[in-house]
Image 1 (cartoon, helix red, strand yellow):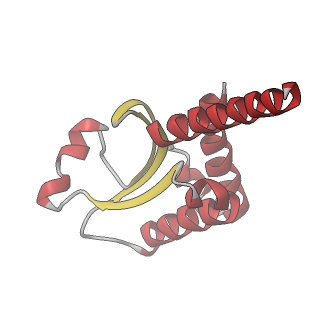
Image 2: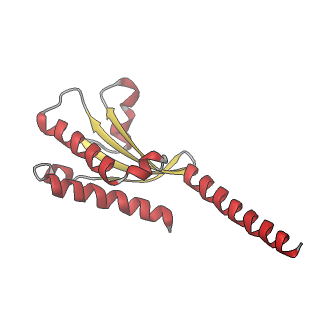
Image 3: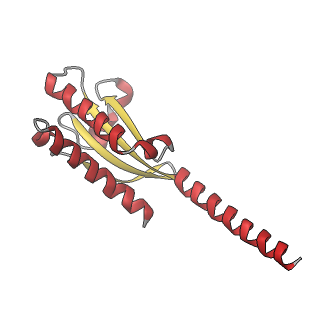
Length: 140
């Protein structure tokens, strides 16, 4: 009888821990926005491609569970024009955003994508490190 109660208590603790983790994961996410306009050169297409590849190769689990989301956004479309002011955009950009409970609490413009676009490995490493920093902050 005591053993059954003890096991039931252990199971209850495990379930509560899992539920708390799932609620936290559902309320926090990282969004990687690649912003572009209507006019797109080969370099702009390459930055979008590298961004998607770097994230898909290095963050499969985070993408699958919804912790990380990738969005490509044309800022020249009426419904997206606000992003230009929101993030002070002046060119094609990759923004990493932390969203908690539906509200953005932090973001970073990864400006070095322009510097690294001619070196795929540096580009991938840069994007991976920056996203890992945001994910690490979620776990602390």
